[in-house]
Image 1 (cartoon, helix red, strand yellow):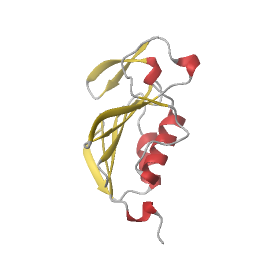
Image 2 (image 1 turned 90 degrees about the vertical axis):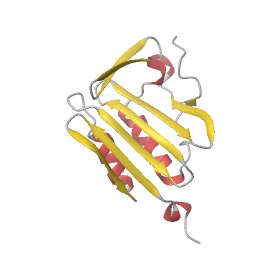
Image 3 (image 1 turned 60 degrees about the horizontal axis):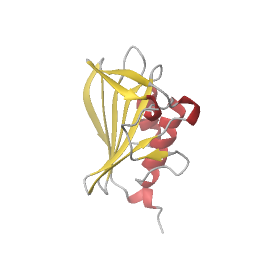
Image 4 (image 1 turned 180 degrees about the vertical axis):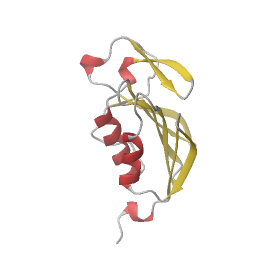
Length: 142
């Protein structure tokens, strides 16, 4: 029996200040991680990973300010956001993505290691990684 990841159709798309929107079908986990690692303070952007069950993982931000990691589904209205550690959840942060500046609650802005873990788990199963803390509440600010 083949693992579920062997039959899952995947596509990754990305966009940064320095590059137009591009996409790749059937990316490897290394492709996805490389794209996340390419999001820097001088070249922030977006990485979007879609799997066959129509779940979508979106990562925006950069390695200096942090990342917002969101999982959404075309089958449900619910969105999940990766949570920052409890001691790093107060206040807000401004993320610049492309030419857009948006303010986010610090509680949903995570570090690169968390963004990579979330992407790796999502790439493997098309579901939220069990070792990342998730919330459906993206708005509250402590």
